[in-house]
Image (tube, rainbow, N blue to C red; front, side, top):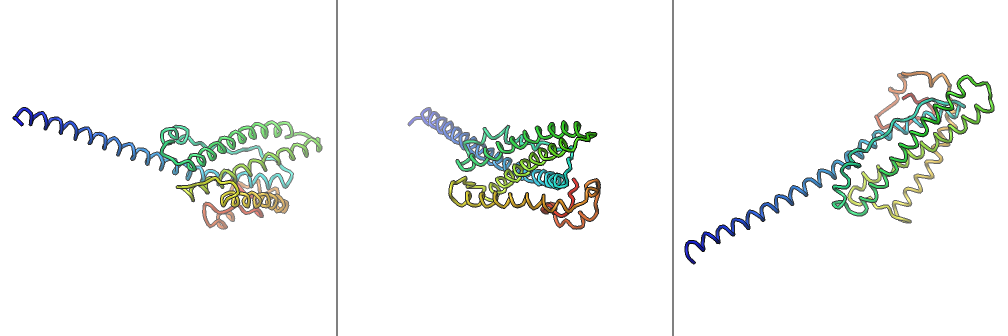
Amino acid sequence: MNFIDEKVLISLISVGLGWLLAQGTSLAKDLWGAQKLKRGLLHELEDIKEQLHRVVMLYARQLQIYSLNGIEPSASIPIYNMFFKQYYKDVFSRLNREQRRSYQLIHASLDTLNKKNEDFAKFTGEIYKDLKDSKDDTATQRAVGLWGDEVTVLYMTAKEVLWHVNYHLKNKRNPALDIMGPMHKSYLKFAEELRHEIKKIIEQGKNLNREDFEKIYDEAIFKKSNSSHAAPQPNRALNT
């Protein structure tokens, strides 16, 4: 092999090594980017979880108001999932099937909750305006009943979304949505308990005083609360 052949060989080897290094660097960047997006999706679920707790508390309070034949002209603000909507498509192929199904279920359910909240706000505003100075007891009772039905649906929907978020966060690698399996059994048990929970909130709410709901600040609530995630106490008016 002459000197020129050696130079050509060295050049070819250098080009080959450079190409391999570039491919390895590109692969590493892709893997790092995918992991970053995966973490982002999970961090967003944590944020959604926090906001859902507040939504649940708001509608628990309104169930209490409904139990006293009242209506409150307020509704929850939307819970946004901007990270999922912008980046899910970029990490789709890096997730396993169970993760994809779980994310899609959670965010579709969240969109449904947001739409229900939006419709509820309009509905509440309309009936509150119509009944504010009304002396028609029959119409008022009918409106209160319809309002209470809407609040019940919203409470159930928010709790269901929260259940799926918690399930995913506890089973990050394999949030399996099985049928007639452990997840299905756990969900049905939750759904049954949720029905009793709503009934309990309404029944115990009847023992509250309307005046309690007019308070903006109640020091007793803060003294009684042990954590930011403490479950709403049905036997106390909830102020948000």
